[in-house]
Image 1 (cartoon, helix red, strand yellow):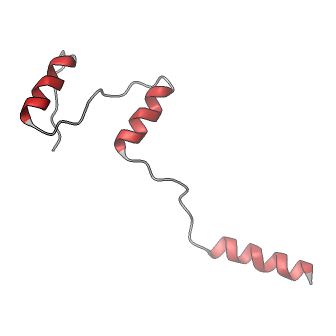
Image 2 (cartoon, rainbow, N blue to C red):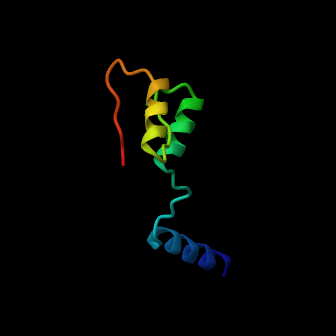
Length: 69
């Protein structure tokens, strides 16, 4: 009887939908990678044009800056 139950469990696992254990947003993944020394783009959230300008002044713009909407 135990063997039958184990076989049923194996079948369920093989035929069930794969589960995702976590879902990262871009800013979460960047923060996590930076903690482990991986180079990531620097950036910040701006809620107004003035905030965007102030943030841009603090960033290196050797290669230019990108604004994402």
